Length: 236
Image (cartoon, rainbow, N blue to C red; front, side, top):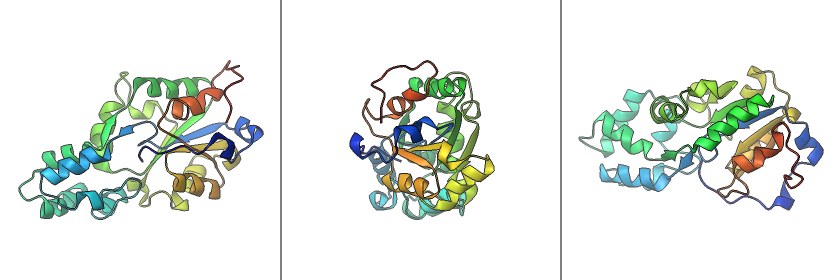
């Protein structure tokens, strides 16, 4: 999860024929569908007393206790108690609000794009390193912008805290493929982490790294899959 620089278009590791065969798209959430601001969360946690927040709250992978909540080894109550060792006096709501400062917003056009892709016959999935605190509060709330729920946008959702492992562990990519009966050569992973994209390819998927600009964000990289798209400039 986070903003990143997209690789040069000439370095995209898949051919036009391979990309044209895609029938399923797997979306990372943070940094792809959801805009992020890690520094805001770091500052909010520091304000509560966590002096090492900048070290333990990573861009793509967390340190303890954040790693524990993302891999499902810690329940929310255990996680909050560990945070209170660094943030004495902070209550669960304050800690949740500080943690959720990592998440900025979901532009509604990205939600529309997910719906458009499904209407065009593409199967849509989410694969995210996340935790039950963010997932059941901020993420659930912001996916309701159009009066729908997160489950209305995806044919399936796989999260690290439910599967007890995080990207770039190959196991979590294989869970997506096996659970939903997907063929790797027909499945495209969109992620903002180079390591996660490489792991997806090792698991047999295609993968493209999403960037922060209108030329390489999730809208640009999925335009080719909409029904009736005949724009010859939509290339990878």
